[in-house]
Structures are given as structure tokens and as C-alpha cells.
Length: 137
Image (cartoon, rainbow, N blue to C red; front, top):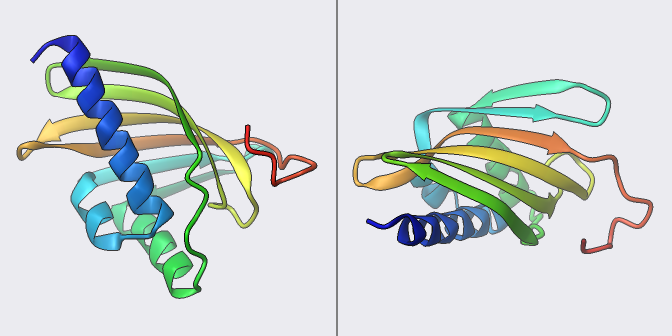
């Protein structure tokens, strides 16, 4: 597959991942998160939270069960780099993962395994809350 086609495939995967999260579709998240996935979330006060696949999916279950749907779907992809069966995607999001609407900067490592792309690692940097949290970019 050509590099340009792979980048488009990965961008489509990221859109699918984001929409699964926005709507807290846990079954889809189970499919796209690798069994060994790790999430590292650093907030604006330098507090690091680490979660595995189960803990991160539980976060979405809680939001779904609390009726917090849909989450903000705003996404901007900044960079996609693919090499054989791995990829790195750097993008920005806006959502309420931490109890308040914030802009997030993400570095997501993907692995192509079992015939599909899967998230193996997410590194999330939370920006400080905006004075007007309804701002869209």
C-alpha cells in the first residue's frame, strides 16, 4: 500500500476511534484498543494518570451510563507517520475527559495486528481550561 493511501486509512481509523469515543460505543472501543494499550494523561498541573485498556474503557462506560453523550467531536489531525505495521498520529481534540471541557493534544501509537489498526499507546496532554469553554478552536 502506498504511503499516501496508508495515511488516509489511518486518518479514517482516527475518525472512527474519535466517533466511538464521542458516542461511548464501548464495543467499538474494545475492538480498536489493543489488549496491551496504555494511556498516559498529563494535566496542566503536571499530574500524570496512567490507565490500561480496561480502566480507559471504564471511563467511557461511566460517561455513557451517566448520560453524558455525545462528547465533543472536534478533532484536528496534525501529523500521520506510518512505517510497515506501526504508525504515529499527532492530533488535537476538545472534550471532557477530566471533568471539564478542555483542549487535548494527543500522540497516539498504532499497531497493525490481526488485520486491523489498533491503539497501543495514547499520550494525552490536557491544556488549561479556557476562560470560555464553549470556544471551538
